[in-house]
Length: 230
Image (tube, rainbow, N blue to C red; front, side):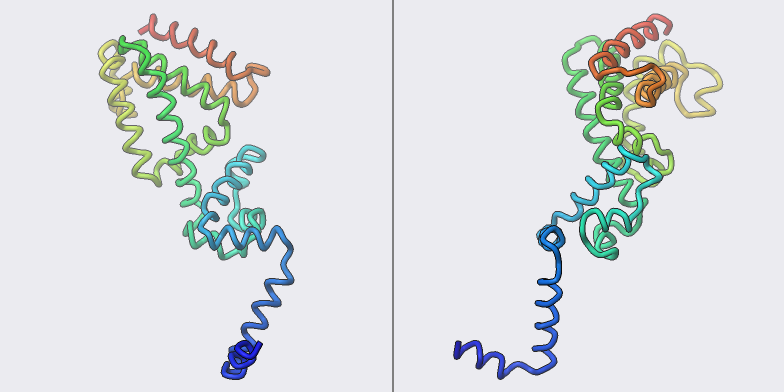
């Protein structure tokens, strides 16, 4: 106790007041708020913000993501999220880059079980559709052109995937308009349109209540038809 009293006696009055104020603010917070603050100070806020954004997208769509709302949901001040993301677009880009890495891992894992290049690409397409059905929020943010345009890593990943597809599909159908208009062959564009279109139809409920397993079977059959057409 003597040490404590000596410490206080040697501390300027202004500093004592600031400490008392900090303790009061701390004690006035609810337990969830204190836990959120602790998580932030331990470096978990970035992950919490991304998870909250993902949940918002799943419930209400990409346009519903607001930084103030994410701050409220994670229990921090409205300024705290901006220490990790300078703006809303940066947060969406980070979420999309995470989604792309997850999707790429799934597609590559599916392709590894096939020696035939055409079947490997087909497996990637099937994995893409299943990913969209199982992770609709990730699929939604990956479908935003403005988000992709703001991310050089996403653009590089897209270019690499197109180049890999073109080695197989571009040889069969090059086309005249597609290379100049969208910088990819007709075969590649057809494959992308098919997998994206099928995924979008299932996710938006246009084909009824489709499970992930049913979506995978549908994708396998549809991509097989496309392969014959090419």
